[in-house]
Length: 469
Image (tube, rainbow, N blue to C red; front, top):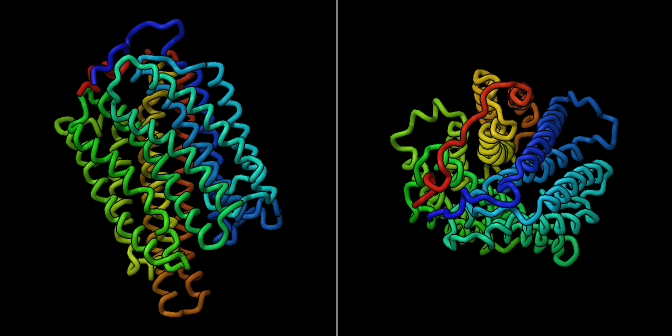
């Protein structure tokens, strides 16, 4: 890729920094909601829930707010901020309309808030990750379509017809998002009942992660890592394998959420095989990025965004490797419905994509407020408190899941599994407090950076030069 036109002047700025900043701040506001909703839900397992008799704040509803705010409030807002930053720079063309961008911004915040209110009022759908009330679903599709039109415009108008790998992932993610959301929120609700509907829900749960969140995440990595390291990605061929492997294997995995269910076994076996196969694809992507880092390994210590990005990559490999084992029927006999699954979900959604977005925040924020970071020490504390807190949460939930599974398989009384889980749940609550404390260090650092007069950060090298392959 030659990335022609990246520095050419336009009638309007190439990147609307105010729009990027707005989505980033909105994403972090919902991030706070996610953290405290998760903490509240964890407290009820220790009989410490502060709202035991308040129907609107019952733990089940708070848990749905936790997951929906994570997916559509935190992840989507922060990914959108990155889209507004990355796509115009790769294409040399601004988005279609800044005015449309602001309309979508305010509309999307209203959608996420309305979904949260609807869930708390008891209007949730019985679809995991699709609990948004039925009257909101059509508006979500319209909002997503407007966003896609706005940010995809530069891809169609670019002068260089060769697509860099980030734009592959983004383009595919745009197409898959509309299809996946419609499939998961409309087909089981109106047309496919029973076990068939459950199979579609399984596809939706996993495809929302694999066909939208994952392309957005890897698109970020293929852009920011070469730009910060100031050299192109190691292997174009491996980037091809990773992209097409994701497209081929990931849509087939969703049924593994419903193993041992009435769904036909051939579908369950197909999900198991494709889940194991995706590990090979993941390995090629991980090799590609670590070979790109070769010779610059010290940047994990000296460059905070790179540290977040590569920590997330290690955790991505860990979760996929873990998944290749836990998806087998042998493992499922022990861990099915246990806290092992909860720990795995947090490791991938927070430890991978959450870490990548926190690294993106670390890179973008000083450039958006045009000032250097107020405190590098706070950046370090934020990283370590978040990483150690998540590690404790993952290990405690994994251990709890094994204890629960073996007790259930031995036909011990149900109450025994609850009693045995309490110490692990306590550790998870402690981990949650550590994580939340770390995020307030981030917010304080961001606030002080925005108010400071420290020198503005320079761009990390030439985009065209770094990505040229």
